[in-house]
Structures are given as structure tokens and as C-alpha cells.
Amino acid sequence: MTVKLLSWNIWGGKFLPGVADFLTASNADIIALQEVEEQDDGNNTAQYIAGKLGYTHAYARSMRYNNKGKDVYRGNAVLSKYPIIDHTIHVLSRDQSRTAVQADIDVGGSVLHVFSVHIIHSHQQPSPIQVEQVTSLIHAAPKQRTVIMGDFNAVPESEAIRIMRKSFTDPDTSDTPSWCLYPDGCSVCKPERVEWKLDYVFTTDDIAAKDFRAETSEASDHLPISVVVG
Image (cartoon, rainbow, N blue to C red):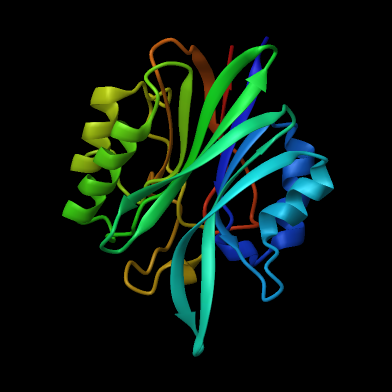
């Protein structure tokens, strides 16, 4: 059995209808989302997208920020066409706190552990907090049948990615850029084009992953990335 996995930082759902349309057309079996925004009524954008797709989902609040004087919460989610039989929230650091959500998914009678994670943005500079967060992630992750997807906000030559690649397999051998589509994606970096690889898929050695690609969509400042595992 082959399974298509897709990961995407959806930029708080700024272009949410476009996100939902792309994911509907993508035919991805399991989706990891970052920057899933919560609404005042307690619902979040992952619920909306899962409803459109007819998928189950697991969500974890990860970050809080001030948006024009109002506290806004964003988190990570895993959406799946297969049953999610359990999920766990992992705190990756207390300082500049971030979380990862782990969904344990029954894929044809075998459990696949899927993580969605969003590491802090250090503007492509060395960051001890990033190192702490990926180290916590490695300790939390099961050593078999595990896929970790998300926005690591770290370039391939960073210490954080070096540590991840030492513990897991990275199916993207070309370091495909995935950010940034829009100049207002970061007021510090002031990006002008898609030139940085910040988004990754990592697997344990017992999972064969192929066909890594950065997909095409203008519904976020990040490109969606995907792989096929089997």
C-alpha cells in the first residue's frame, strides 16, 4: 500500500478557500498542517478543512501572538483519510514554547506515527532554541513507523537540521526551496522569491519514501511539500 503525505504551513489560513481547494485536489491521504488558526468560537481551520475533505483530524495549540491588540492562537494539525486511533501533544520547549502533535494512524492494519511540527523562526540564523526543540522532538518520536513533517524554519546547513538528519531519513536530496512566495511573509527577512528550504519530511529508516516534491499553490507564503511512502 502506498500513501501520499503532504505538509503545509497555511499562513494562518489567510487564503483558506484556496488552501481547501488545493488540498481537495491533491489527493493526499495524510496531511500535516502548521499555522492552523483558532477562531473566537473555539473552532479552528483544521476542522474546516477536515470537514471539506471528510477526514479525521488531531490538533494541538502551539503558539500565541498579539494581532492588533488581540491574542490569537495557532497550532499544528494532522488530517487523515485513515482512522486516527490516538494522538499526543508534545511540548518542545518552555521558552518560546512550541508543540508537536502526534497522530497514531491505522493504515491497513499497521500503525503509522505522524507528527506535525512548527519550530520557531530564527530568520535563518543559528538558534539554541531551535536545537532544543528538535532535540525534544527526537526524544518524543517513536523509533519505528514514524513520519515527522512540518515547518522547521531552518535551512539545510543549520544545526537543527543536521541533528534531525542524523536521527532520521530526509527524502529530499535536492534541498528544494519552499519559502517565501510573498514579500510580507517576514518583515525581518524581507523575502523576494522562493529561495529558502524551511519545510521538511523526516522518516524512520524502516519507511521507504519517494517522489519528494514542492507542490504549486499561491494560497500561502509556503509551498506545500509531499512524499509517497509505502
